[in-house]
Image (tube, rainbow, N blue to C red; front, side, top):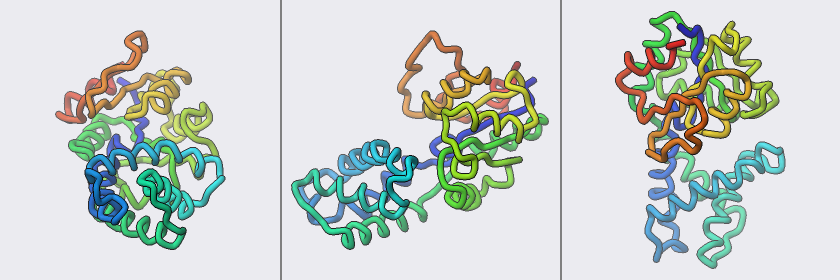
Length: 237
């Protein structure tokens, strides 16, 4: 049996895309510039912009507040309207408050982490984000106590899929690569990154996208439930 579960946070154990989508619909899509747009389509486009702009913050080109405003301005600009920084910040703040209130665990996450620990394996988060953001997220969703340690890119100084962040996580878990498995929703960051370090990988595909490369040895999961079966599959050597 494997000794450690390395696990991503966003959209693996904490639902990000659902609350974020809902927050865009309620706090951003109500702006007059989107009067002729489907709110759900506005939210979908916002999710794409988040992915497109994430590297700007990771590279240190924008602060967190600047990044949030920039995402709003890009979204509005695509309607042919320009808004100033102050208005973008107001919208960004409304979105953030709506998102924070809507945060929730991925179905079955708490039960799975508890079962992995019951079986004697350590649980270590490996995540790209701010330390304060991830700590607060896990506490809000009542998952923090289920982690033995958190390896967060801001503190680690490197981002997934850099091998260094996995090395740090293995040390935190007290496990060799062959004794650990990485669970995450990002094919490049979690699956490819872990396999490059000799760590087994499990891909959480909640959207039913299908394995991008059938030649890659990965445990594909559509759900974290039922906890006993998923935990057994993750820890099986």
